[in-house]
Image 1 (tube, one colour):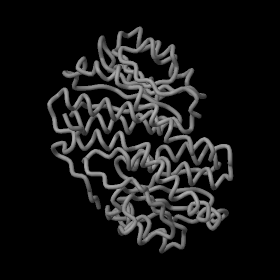
Image 2 (cartoon, rainbow, N blue to C red; image 1 turned 60 degrees about the horizontal axis):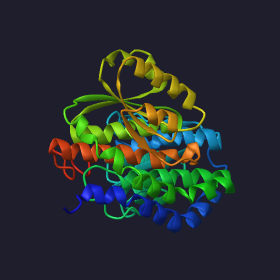
Image 3 (cartoon, rainbow, N blue to C red; image 1 turned 45 degrees about the vertical axis):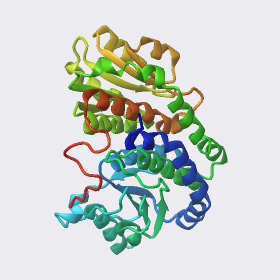
Length: 346
């Protein structure tokens, strides 16, 4: 049986990230040289999958560049026409298509206020790219399935490249250049686990938990599961989940936990123990052998990936789980009902 468009694009992601790194490292190096010292914080405008990449940037730029990151409120710029003052900000727009008018309006206002702007997009001839001072093309190639996959991971890689070169950290750059290999290893290690996805054919709700750098992963996995399978997947940080939403957990309630080795692992281990005591159904994206052994559905990623780069690999099991569950439910994985590839919001 031939692969669906979505499955092909999921497996194309290591190559897409490699293209981005090969094609853009030199130009981004020049870009950060021009921009260094020109801003004191970052504002990011994005929607949907791109907004989840922006959540990654909040941790990345904060931890590695000591830069506060705010997520823009695009309707203030487009509908209310009451934009905030952006003095001293670098304003970044992230959009697969570069077409959404509200995202474009944020960068247009930033330029009017004299602030530097950066577009991260798969369409370097788009309205967003044309208005920005600097552009990082994603080099993802045509993405034909409605659900975004390779434009998400290349957006993460673009942000990681910008952050690393801005910091001038050669060790981090060396690690980033290994990301395509880690992603390929992740994809090749999931077949055994995903053969059991039929267990979840009749679920209609679940929670997705992450923290730290993988807070973004929780949001992106929940988005993929929801748009592909029609399961209501609700994302939370492990901290926020304890502040009330944990009450939704009852016997057999499915919870996808993204728990990678790093500084937040102990917190996620504690939460996992609580979820086990509540007899939840645990789906575990992890590189910790002990946690994987506790899972009803273990979804492993390779050991040895620095925590700040794990989102590039950790999202892949979530994408494939969403794809396989979509097939089990008998839905179209390439063109889910009710959504379009390019969504223009105002």
